Length: 139
Image (tube, rainbow, N blue to C red; front, side, top):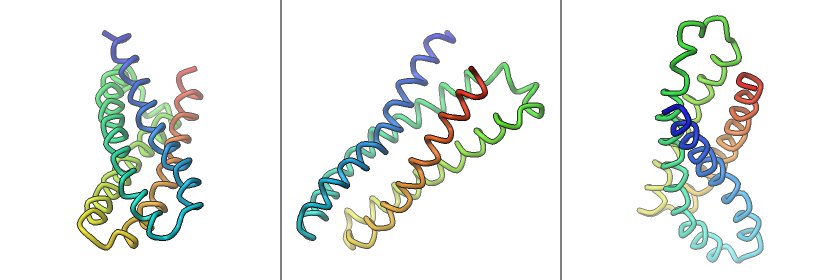
C-alpha cells in the first residue's frame, strides 16, 4: 500500500508544482500580447488550476498516509514540522487563488488576475521549498 501512496504522492506533486511552472511559462507568452488579449488568455488558462487542485488533494491524502510512521517522533523532527506548516500555508494560498479565480470569471478579471499572479508566485516558492525539505528529511 505504501508504494501505491508514494506513486500517488509523486503524481500529485507533478500535477501541483507543474501547474505553477505552467502558469509561469504562460506568463512569458502573455507578456507579448496586447492588454485585452492577455486578460482573455489568462482567463482561459485558469483551467490549469483544476489540475493543480487535483494534485494538491492527491498530495495531502497520500501524504497523510505516508507520514503515519512519523507522528510519534514528530517533535524531534523540526524540518518535518516546517514542511507540514508550509503545506498548510500552501493549501490556504491555493484556496485564496481559487476564490480570486472565481471572482475573475464573474467579472473584475484584471484586478483578480493581478492578485492571483502574486499569490501564485508565492505558491511556487513554497512548493519548491516543500520539495527541498522533503528531500532533506526523507533522503
